Every structure is written in structure tokens, then in C-alpha cells.
Length: 319
Ligand code: KG4
Ligand code: ZN
Image 1 (tube, rainbow, N blue to C red):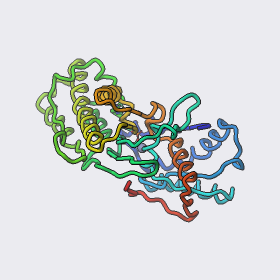
Image 2: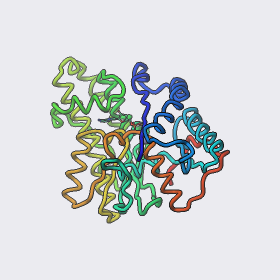
Image 3: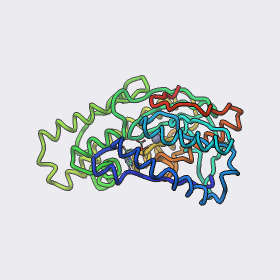
Image 4: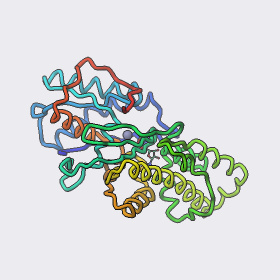
């Protein structure tokens, strides 16, 4: 991995309490060229030295995907290089395999795993049987885990994105003080549901609004909600790993930056004697490195490039 340049829009969107698509697109248009140039400069290579160009094809916000995909296709056309349209979630499956100094993908250490992808938009549990061979086990039937963090944080009055704020406040909170539901914890399937948890926090705060005036109560509330989310994520991941007989669990997505989730996953894997690979903090969130690494893998495995007229796939599902 020669470079990984990320242009974050979090500050911009936080003023509006969430992602504003129109703004996101304008920012992408403005930032795309400097980011590409920055990545090439940092990698000390010229465009002529590239083997291929890759970009996310989906899923995602249509207009935002369009900017990246069409720019990458144009670049591939001009450079006469192959183009690869990549599934964003499939790329997440491989970000936990990137580590070291300098960072590189360690496919020589690859082993079958159960992978959990937890972000603001998605909660996915995937069985990765072999390189480039996977099967989705389950996903959220309503809100994603990160969305739950963000919505609960909003109810508490914390700025967007709420996940990191809740993580920080929960550090000095009592996770046992308030008892919130653990949705689908005991269900045999591999799906998740988080909107009921958010709703129960809403009702709880309606009854106990004065708690929000007390800083310690807020910390306890954050810790208690966080504990509910983390317990469900960890338990269902471990159960799937056990059922499928894999010896490895991997995790990625913005929510895997959460320190309690990282710790609880580590504890659970240690108890079960499983190898745990969580994406490095800098690669938990969306990044181009995982897109490039997967594209390279596909080329190595002889998977044909994507046509230069390929369209975005906003609703692209992981099989
Ligand atoms: O993967 P990501 O950067 O973007 C997408 O959603 O695609 O994930 C962002 C999500 C947000 O919901 C944010 O609140 C959550 O990840 N998040 C966290 C933490 N850091 C980011 N949630 C809990 N604890 C954190 N430390
Ligand atoms: Zn993502």
C-alpha cells in the first residue's frame, strides 16, 4: 500500500446533523483531483506506472458514486489501463488484512473467517470462505449499528456523528446502570435490528428527561446503550463463527473504531481461541486502500476487468 489519502466530509455534514447528499457530491467534485494527485505524489509514482484503475461501483449515494466511478473510468480510458468497479462491502471484507509498517495486505496469512461490517449505513455478517468467495449470513433489518449510535446520540443532544462521542463519554460511565434491550440477541438467525433499541431510549428519556441535566447520568446512559449494541454484535458474530467452524473473526467499518467493541471482540475471540483481525483504526472507516487491494486481488485471480461503460450500482448487494 503505497499511499492512502482520505478526504473526510464529517465536519461539513456535522453542521447539518447528518449527510446532505447535494453537499457530498459538490465536495467530491472539488476534492477528487487533489486527492488523486496527493495519492500519486505520496506513492511516488506516475499514472503511467499504474496497472489498473478501480473505484467503488456501489452500494452508496447515487450521485456520490457517479463522481468517483465516472472519473475512474475516464482515467482508465485515457491511460489505456483496465478499470475495475468494486463492491464497497466486498472491499470492507479485506481491510482487516491490511497491516504492518509499511502497510500491506497479508493475503499469505488469510484464513476462512466470519467478518462483521459495522458502519453508519450497514451491519453485515459475512462468511468469507476463501479469497473472493463469500456468503452474506445476515444484516440489519432496520437501522445499522452506527445509525443507532448516531440517533441515540442525537436524542442525548450530542453532535453528529454521535458514535465517537458516545464512545468517549461511555468510558467513564456505568454500563449496568440502565437496562436496554438487546434486539435479536437470542434469535437463531444472523440478522440484526437496532431501531427498537433507539426507540426504547427515546421512551426512556421521555420519562426521565431530567437525567440529561446530569453529566454522570449522560455518561452512564452512553455506556449502557453502547453495552447493548456491543453485546449483540459480539454475541452474534461469535455464534456464527462457532457454527461455521472458522478459526478467525474479522471486523471493519466505522463502528469498529469503538473501543468497547474492539475490547469485547478481543476478549470473546481469546476465550474461544480464535484469531481476531480488526481493521487498523485508520482503515476502519471508508478508504480507497481497501478498494485498491481488492482490485489487485481480482486482477491476480484473473477476474476480467469491468467495462468502461459500466454504471453505478447504488443498491448493489453483497451476495
Ligand atoms: O464506515 P463509516 O465511516 O461510514 C459509513 O457509514 O459508511 O462509519 C461511520 C459510522 C457512524 O455512524 C459513526 O457514528 C460510527 O461509524 N462510529 C463510531 C465510532 N467511530 C465511528 N461508533 C461508535 N464508536 C466509535 N468510536
Ligand atoms: Zn464502508
